[in-house]
Length: 326
Image (cartoon, rainbow, N blue to C red; front, side, top):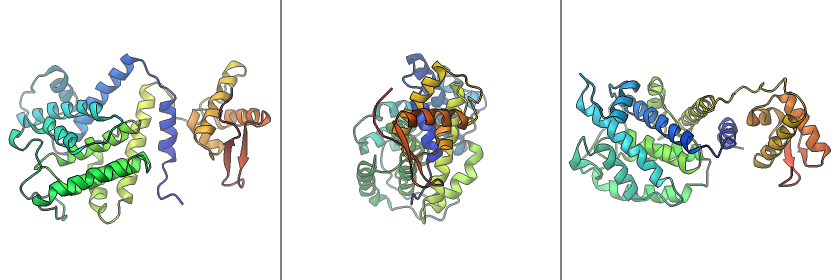
């Protein structure tokens, strides 16, 4: 039995993947969009006073905002630099301690150069939390173990669960004097990016739920993993909307016959290959068509001997009988 249900995330991930490859201009635009979105939301969760529009002006135009603390400005520019660095380490190699230290240095150097990119040497505390954080002398060994855990588990669990646990384990070590929450969210999104997934935006309005589920995660990570799952799903849906894609499952009810149906059959067959065991309603969401359309495509593929239904009517699903095919 699956511990977590990531079906909706998987479905939207597949629909996003189906849009690739994207034009270079579109990729650049999306990267800049999330550069501002992640910087604003992550800083706002920690009390930064800049609005999203002000964050954009600070990051993209290099201007300060009258009446705003200089520290808030430095947090915005530093976070944007750290975000850019994610793309350099979102590659097929393990994430190292050196990468984590550099990520923090980029974020924190304008705020406190002495402590930027350096494991803390003092005790720190989390306001509003009863959690006792590790003593500073334990931090280097704990971070070494953290890196080993990441290398050992990446690709061996669902990307959303792995990303959530990366966040939780890192923040419970709290290896820096400041900026640990932002670093945890950067590493969480790095884990998602390395798996080919979209980033996860945690809006400030979710701050209470975010903190509450993270506080409980030491006893059981379930609620926090589910919180991250929901944030991933919402960000995926936002991306699909930005790309002009519908997220409704009833799209395509009035679809005509002919070439459009043939393309639909090909798309459905690929979905069955990639996601075996799905039912018609799940496949409908996966490819963005109506259940009625999917049922027509299913009949075509079954008649052609390319797919079959296995299992009981209530819990079975469709499986491909061959890997390729037009």
